[in-house]
Image (tube, rainbow, N blue to C red; front, side, top):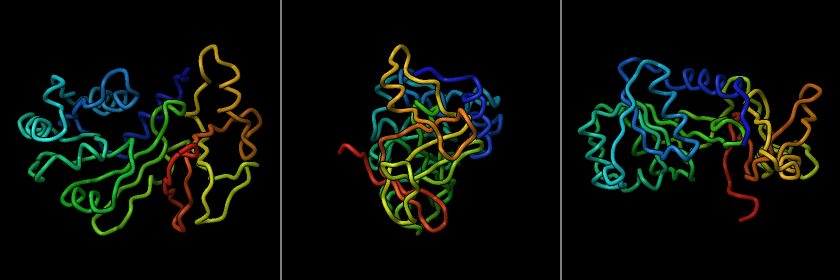
Length: 231
C-alpha cells in the first residue's frame, strides 16, 4: 500500500493527542516490523523522546513470558491484541500507564479488568488508512468497547451499498476518509479502484476507503465494530 507523508505525520499527531507521550515512556515493540502496528510503537516511543523496548520473540510469547517482560523491563505503554491480554495472568504491572488493544474484538470483561488503574484504549485502523483511524478511551463498567471516534483530520461513515448513511444502530460498512487515506495498492489499479472510492461527502477529489468491516454508529457518535462483511 502506498501511503502519503501527510498521512504518517497526521497519524503521529493524532497519537500524541491520544496517549500524551512523555520522554520517560518505555513502549513495548510487540508487533513484528512487517506488521503495520509496529509503526505505531516506533512513533509512540522514538518520535517523542521515549524508549522503545525490544525483546526476543520467546520473551513476547503471550502468557508468563510476556508478563515477565512487561514487569522486568518496566514497560509504561503497550499495544496488544485482546487474545494476548486475556492470557497475561494477574494484573501486576504498576508501570503500565497506557494499554491499547487492537486487531481483534475486545470483550467487555477484558476491558473492565484491564482498564482499572490506567488508561485503556481500543484502537482501530487499516494499513490502507495509515494504520490507525479511530480510538476510544475505555473505563471500567462501560460494557462492550466501541472502536471509538476519529482521530484528527479523519472522517468515519457507516454506509449502505449505495454509499448512503445508515441510521444509528443499523449495521453498515465502515468507510474512512480524510488526510490518512492512502494512495492505493502499488501496481494494482483494479483493487485500488474497488477499495478507494470517490467521497460523496468530502471535497472534489477526496476518496473514501472501504474497510470491508461492518459497524454501527452508537447514539454518542462512536462506532461499534461488528465483524467482517465476508465472514
